[in-house]
Image (cartoon, rainbow, N blue to C red; front, top):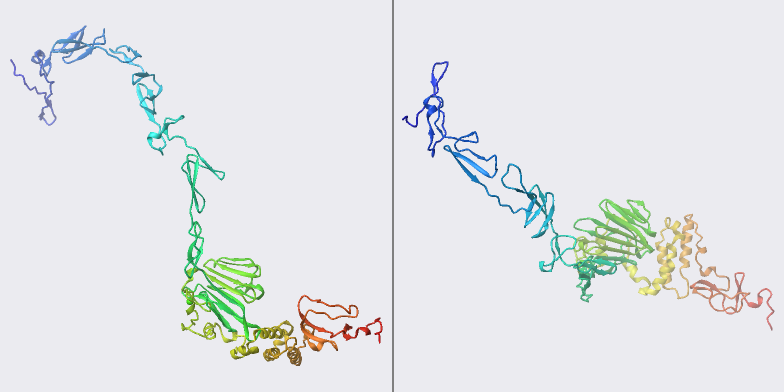
Length: 566
Ligand SMILES: [Ca+2]
């Protein structure tokens, strides 16, 4: 017997006459009890082989498996020349199974789920989840799940939606409030102090109560803030006023008088120099009392002038109101008899076009202001602080430190002693004197005042009027004297047309500086009562005399009058 592991070499003659060998791997013969050697002995085959089988005239190698051509359920296999037969038994749960030729067992038609068979293409919903929709596609179940909206109530409260697979919270009623519909649990604020919510058709509102208190610490004011229900104390804006001849009321509430007749710094943001306001005073009504003549607001290089008779100029050009400016942003408009300047950065100026000024700065400028309006630090006591940072007790000295520009801007040299001695301090008399003598400073004499200094005539007029009896007119002498001086300078003024002086009264008539009574005339000899609404200077005929052709005559001398009985 030949050894079982014999190596046969196949030889190839190569060109370089060397021989190389390659071994052929033979199949394993483990477990084969019928090995065929015959072909090897004849050198016809290289490997030993296990014995095959022949079935219905067909050859099968050892290890082959095949189905019976007569019955697909019969499985045949060949092993070392022996054919083994096995029969497959079929079990099927399908209701719609079909027998396929060549196959042993019937196959299911469609898809099966939870004991139900679905046809190809049929859609169905999973019994365990209503939101999962499935389709049978060639025997495979393909499913999709619908996404449900989040649930806003507890799961126990949810109900199945009628038109969807999802579970939803039960429908709750909406609320209708002042014509508007609100959803359940919606919250809204009909006004700043009221908060309402909708609870299943019931509107519930809560009104915030404000503490009733109008008290705020000094320097603070109670203010309604945008978006808040209750007012609260906020830092007050600073308001400085200039009025009369002129009196100043500072941001911190201190009142003082200052008769400077020059140009002064009224207020300035001392820290950032963002803006400043100057005021120019003049002696319009009398040489002793100055009045605010005009204001200038400086914002950077922009200059806004508020002049007499409500004239407004921006960079020296007269503007029409209302006016709006961009960069810097400010507006000027007219409100009744005043012009109002407003700048976004927190400055407002009200000017009556004559002598009244009201300057408002927002609280952001607190402790940063300087000028005649004071330092706006909340204390009135330190408001007379000069430009030199010294604290003054005398308002005139204090005011003069805030003068700006040259002295040429001053309209008169002021004399304090003259001022206080005027009419010995009798206010009513002083007022009457100023009212009468201001005629010298009015438009009638304007041409002359440029040529002849009016001040001495004015002061004599005042001193005459201070000593004048109540119903007399003592100013006319000064008018006449001044008119004559004017005439000498070739300025002719017909002032008599504008004011009635005693010298103009007809012969026999009496001058009354202030009366509402009328003279009797020939036509109305018995007329009594008043014929004027306001008291005016007038010439009155005394006693029973009547006025006729500018003369006071006895009534019986009137034309056509009966002769007096003797
Ligand atoms: Ca102060």
